[in-house]
Length: 194
Image 1 (spheres, rainbow, N blue to C red):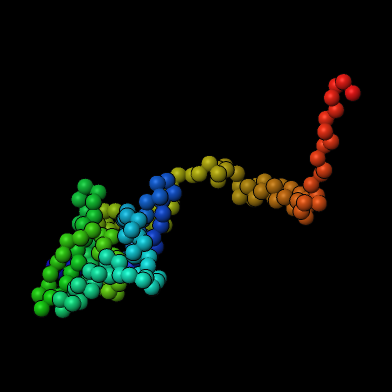
Image 2: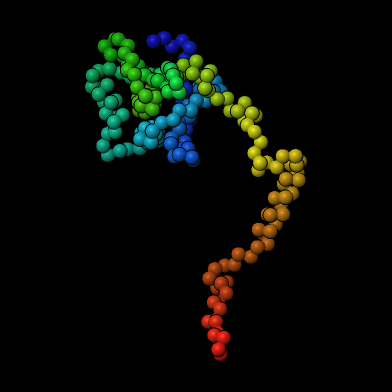
């Protein structure tokens, strides 16, 4: 497959969604400003993180095994490609050099990324994908609706003044130093008959 119409990316981060605890890998364009986010499984996120951080594991993981199989077959992983997006599903491939031939092996993007970080090979993404779903951070922030926390309509100085009152209150609050500051318990209530 030709390298035309593809951009190299690197793994910027792996994040956890606060709503459903799913993992998201964030890819950043090397020679550009676009970012691409892809939902991945927990196991794959862990596998990518282990390789990125060079953590030693006692037994090889699945991606380590695949890398060893490729090497033992005297083949070489040349690059990985995220090449298509169909009905909200990303498609990727491992590009191998085996006995002078280029082979493409279809796989999930998460597996391709886990292999790329182990073999230290480039990650390429189709420009069509980046054009369609890539994110330019500055533009996304400008289009974001105002949060109710921002107190629209007030000048920045007045917003800060409101916080200063709260800050002063906290500074004057005597939190005490420990258990000696706890008042003694009330004596047992007297019965109405006494």
